[in-house]
Length: 173
Image (tube, rainbow, N blue to C red):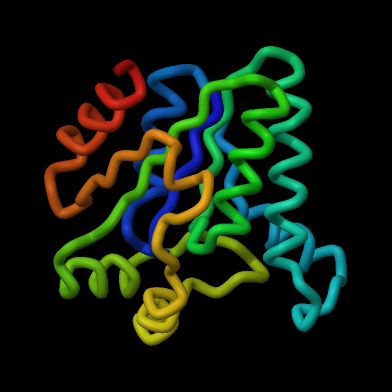
């Protein structure tokens, strides 16, 4: 199975992905640490390092799926080309794809999370609230073939245990 996370920075998708991955024994491929590694190699940040990170994650997921492993992609997946990337990969391997979108419906909670987190990525600063607001403006509606893929939207203001159980129920259903 291929599971693709989606949601704004700081919404809680990485936390949910890590717990689900641990519970199901699935590897989690996170785009941000990949991008940080690309930048640590000396690639200029003016280059499309975000796109490169998505492509590296796709190549790694491709190899894992070819070997019969299930994968969780941890990425914002805010636009159709990113989402369609996972649709194409799942079709290539004839694997089931499901999207888990994580939102945080409480602006103050979301803001507090961003202000208190430190992901420890040497070359990618944690986003500011202003950057998240800009990301929201760029977050596209679900259209194209990705709109037909099973998707659940989870609100991370609910207790984490409930959110994880809802995600697991969706994946099992």
